[in-house]
Image (tube, rainbow, N blue to C red; front, side, top):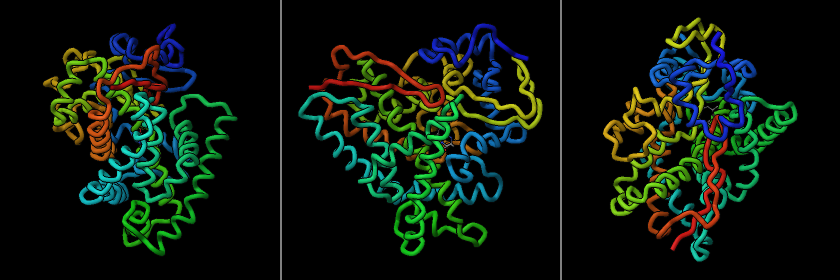
Length: 402
Ligand code: 2IO
């Protein structure tokens, strides 16, 4: 058994600054067992890569308990074989080509609308005033849902996200999260029925009209994929945008370079994802005993891949704790593809299906904001704080400009 005396991922100290613990974890406890969670935490780049690509030894079965109760059915990441490739393709088609071009236009319009009221004030909280509502707005547009319902959908989303991203949960919180999921399911059902009768160009219509093995998907299958997309497109979006601005403000030279040449934005986004991945943990279930240099993950156990720790492993990146959009080992052009060096989108068969969409979204919004937020800086008295162990990002980011 690999217990590390005195250390817990559930401690307040770790929550305050996980990055401070990663060197020690990789060095001295690369397979850290957490009794309260009954899970093994892997922090080395090569070990994480192995877990995510050895699909025989590690499966996504753990999502049956970690996600399915709030997804109301199986998500893409749970599927295997022909079903997985067919349904993944349906979702990919909803996020590429003409669909993506249309989405980019919608994203620009949504961002312009949401930032407008803050421009005359010269101050905006990039997370709470802008990023969070924008993330929900954009997701609703992609799904073809009514944007007027965004506060309600945002509330359901946060309950669902809380369920997926909690390592321990009280029965009361669990009940609250399940209530959110059930209400969202009830809200979606009539929409699904309507799209079956009268499909449009949106993702829900695509899911309703697509066939797998000559058969249309059931309401339960469509619902789960909608909630899957809703959670995956919303939860990390505001975090990534705020982290990008945080790092650029902290590195004024790189901010100036990006301002001068917006073609550097993809590199800045990729480096943000490497340096501070918004999804910090990816769970898998061991199908057999798996021996690592630092310990064994036993058959049946949950292994949590620590993406933030892996992305700062000196065996994978030189000067890993430095934010440098010019780093030669980043491979910007590949950073949003299956050949990415960083692990922010995971890797292997279940690598993020929305990576290209995520890039387009953050790039579009940042390119719109940078010229508007002239002289952008932290508001006086602002105290920076990050929250979250599973998904992690700034609690707020109050910025002044012009
Ligand atoms: C939605 C953490 C929001 C995914 C998940 C049950 C499956 C899968 C992920 C990401 C982001 C979430 N897991 N997206 O880590 O679809």
